[in-house]
Length: 187
Image 1 (tube, rainbow, N blue to C red):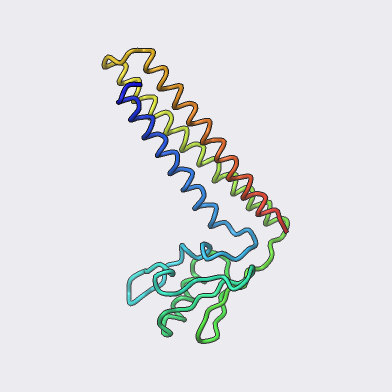
Image 2 (cartoon, rainbow, N blue to C red; image 1 turned 180 degrees about the vertical axis):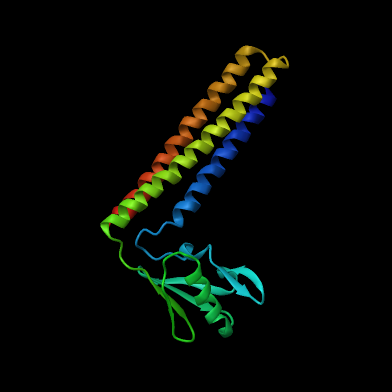
């Protein structure tokens, strides 16, 4: 295998791995009825005038399957954290006892579960599109090498390897989606 072609194959594989990782991160933000610290990862707290991720100003944990506990490192931040959670449009209602903020996660309704499955499938489709775009870019790079003198059979082998990678990663997207859908639909 030509070194340049191998470079594009390796690059495509690495990019596809990143696409799978991104999909997993996005799916971890979807609430499956269980409390998870990842649910509040996107919350930014006004910390002395600058928006700061919640995880950098408080300890975020789950005390049980339905409760997220947030313990601020500075007591005077309790109000700011509570306000940030309410303003984050996550649909969460925090309550505090002056020391710890607790967020109770209500059980999901059947309708909400179906909506989440649709959203999951949408994220999966975005992941597949990313993988196909990576395939297209790699194939275009190999075609350009072919115009610059790369033998046709080497180019065809490279494109075939990239197609195998694409098929493998699209199957992985389907596996990740199946696991998430099962998690969402489990009552």
